[in-house]
Each structure stands twice: as structure tokens, then as C-alpha cells.
Length: 258
Image (cartoon, rainbow, N blue to C red; front, side):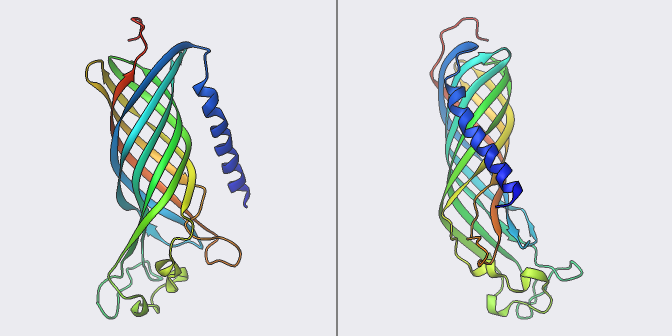
């Protein structure tokens, strides 16, 4: 394990230890509010291969259900725990270029070679949330941080050439062999850290509308990464732009809450 990996794992452990502390906090102005709803969005992802595989962002979709428990307001910060169960598409899209960084042309199809692999996961983030602004009527900015766990469901490859007929002579580096194109996903369980920020608009009789940008950094690997394996690292990276709608199940009875 590298020093970077050790540091990242320590951060993840610290966040997981802080989550139950936040849920039980009673230092500030107490809240007892539960909101549930739905979220959906667009993802842009790649896989951090080592040795490096040149890539561009692969587009996909994410959607699921959201649970939020708000436990207190400490000074100006509104503290909550957010959990989701999402169906999310991630993966990678290769940039198959030659030594001059020009697209590699397939000798059979006469087209630039293209390859992408879409991986579908059930993802469960569990995040601490801090918000600043209006709770009931108006706008609130928020920040999220916490661990995320994923369970691989299936994958789908898309390419415009046959693997045995790829243009090896013009490819450079690891792309000559393209091992990742034929390897099956070996680690079904994924985990990492999610961080996000966004804006929420609330109205008492309507609910909560949220717009959020989120980044996920995977600490696990898609493929095995021992010294005998092909890749030393193959972790998921994903940026998501999401919208969500929540409605209140429990609401604190306090006329001073605005």
C-alpha cells in the first residue's frame, strides 16, 4: 500500500467515526427532522489505471432514493446525516492515439479505434452534511462528506473494432496490449470517499429542491492489484451533477425555525 493510499484510508476511517458522533450531537439547537425523496443526475467518470491508460470522461446516469436526518443547528451550521441508495453508471472511455497523439486508424474498418466500458453499481453513500441559510423558507448552501460503498451489477463494452484486429503497430504503451479490454471485473465490492456541495430551496407545503455537484474517489480497484496482476491500480473516479426532491416525514415543532 502506498503512502497516499494509507493517508486516504485514514481520512475515510476518521469520517466514518465522525458520522455517529454527528448523529448523536446535542450541543446546539436540537432538531428531529427526517426527509425522504428521489435524486437523479449525470455522471462523468474514468478509471485510474496504473500503468496509465489514456482516457476521456465517460458519460452516464445515476438515480435513486435519498434519506436525510437533521439533528441540530450549531451556531449557523445546520447538521444532518444523508444516505442514498443509487443505481449509478461509471467506467472508462479510452483515447487510442499514436505517438503523435493522433487517433489510431483501424486497418479493417478504416475508422479511428474506439473503446469504452460502462460499469453499473448499486451505490450507498453515508455522508455528514453541513448547511448554511434558511431551513424552511428560502435557500440553503450545503457541504457533504463521507464514505461510499458500491456493489457491482454488470458491465457493457462498446467498441468499433475486433480485439484481434486492433492496430497494434500505431498504438503506444499499454494500449498495444489493451488487457483491460478483455478482462472481467474482478472486485465486485467498491468503496471510497464522496464529497459534494450544492444549493437547496425549501417551501413548507412543497418540499425541498436540491442541486448538487459531487465527486467520488474510489479506494478499491476494479481489477486485482497484486504484484503478479496486470494493473497496480484501477480505481473508480466519478463527478456527478445531481438534482433531488425531498419531502418531510418528521419536522421539528419550533416556530423560530425559518
